[in-house]
Picture 1: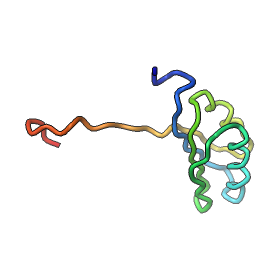
Picture 2 (picture 1 turned 90 degrees about the vertical axis):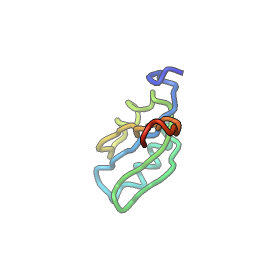
Picture 3 (picture 1 turned 135 degrees about the vertical axis):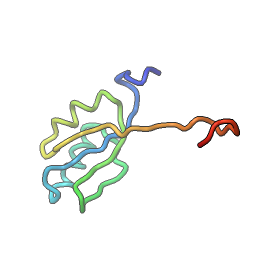
Length: 84
């Protein structure tokens, strides 16, 4: 699947404006369709997965400060000729 396709599932990291509202924001994100995987109340961060197309909808949730997609990478296979 094209990595930019709107149906591609990605991991979102959501920064909450007011840490005291982290649980409420997490519930609102869940209602928008985000599969919540972690809620870090002490720092106001919510992590979850969902289709790339959710980005705009979850960015508009009241109390959300910033939304970004978690980046991933993959190392090449081990090869004695290539230092790692």
